[in-house]
Image 1 (tube, rainbow, N blue to C red):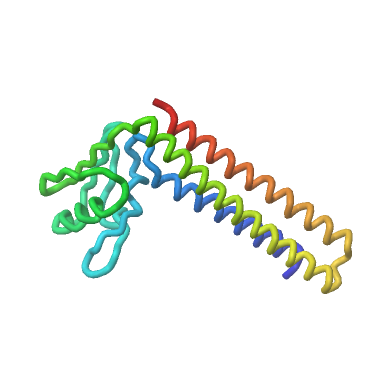
Image 2: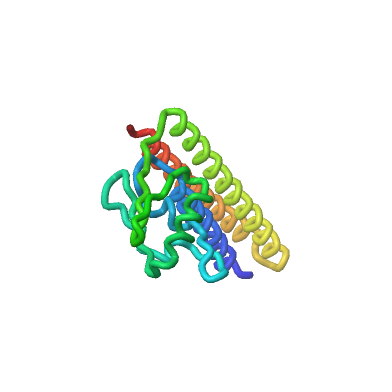
Length: 185
């Protein structure tokens, strides 16, 4: 690997950590109806588990209501079963063509539980970013052994640390935003 390849690889892997956290946060209930709450639910469709977002249009016409309109109406019962099995805690209502999910508001206790979950997920991604930094620093040391001047190696490690700080801040900002969203009444 070259100097630039190490930096590029490090940045890509850290960006994936931030994206992963964003995906995780979409699945955390906030008392507000968002399609992200259910789009990752896997539905048994013709023998294979398929993400709900590939089987239906998911919309939020009201702040406390999700509407799921399957592309194939025969899949409604399977979608309903998958929602009931999932851990989102919402009972679906169906009329044969569409499924309605009333999203209940959260109690203070539930809000605090979800904030703790959000903090745990953020910490897991901070650890992942530190692991990426460790791997990048090892790669930098490997470049030094392969003939990269020591000043360039130190500069590379400095840039890796800057990336680490930058992406850790993105994680912290995402956590702050999710906490604010969860705690608003």
